[in-house]
Image (cartoon, rainbow, N blue to C red; front, side):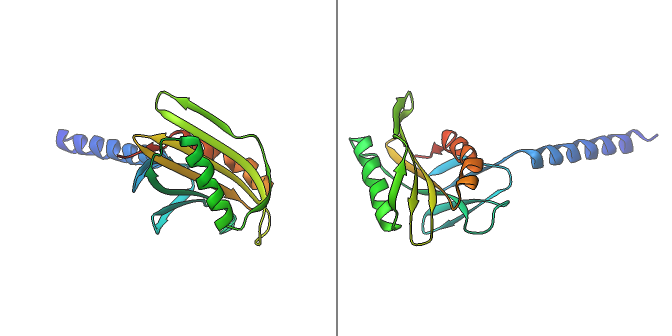
Length: 170
């Protein structure tokens, strides 16, 4: 066999294996102020500075994670989180909240807060997570929303995993 032909075949096989391996990896995206790993089967789109992430397995408009534009980090992270969440609840017409106690803390990278609740709204019940991070002088907020408790319980772990790996780009 010709050594040049053999080498070309090996290179093509290696390239094909690399392409297959790369396709199996989760997509890493950098949109605006964020870098994150998109869960397998989810898509991302940006409109008005809001990065909307949606799982391809769900009917349109029933489940989404919203990465809101990063804002400067205020001196009181918890007050900023409460104010941002309250403003969004009001803007989206959410009421009759049934919430779990908020989780707040600090890691070596900075403060975090998480609020989980179900709400009534004009469009029906909403099951939501408000997840915030304070990183590199920035306030980052991810809002995960589902139209059913079943979809929320099934997909919230993926949204939480996305949030835990979220990086704020300075």
